[in-house]
Image (cartoon, rainbow, N blue to C red):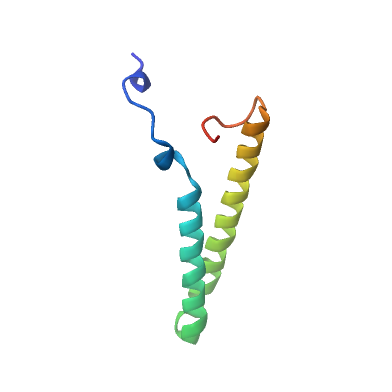
Length: 82
């Protein structure tokens, strides 16, 4: 039984990871600014905020590499990114 044959494919708007990557990274950047502005009260959270921004940039970079490989026609590229 093939369950994926029963489901329709996602629309392009729902399958695109860019909005989630951008919004998540921006949310961590805003949180980092808030932590910096509030001072010592939340200073323990600053490394977590910075890590969130870095992971967001790494995720977007990985997405960009996979998309470039898919456009190039590489065999190992992720499908559905075009």
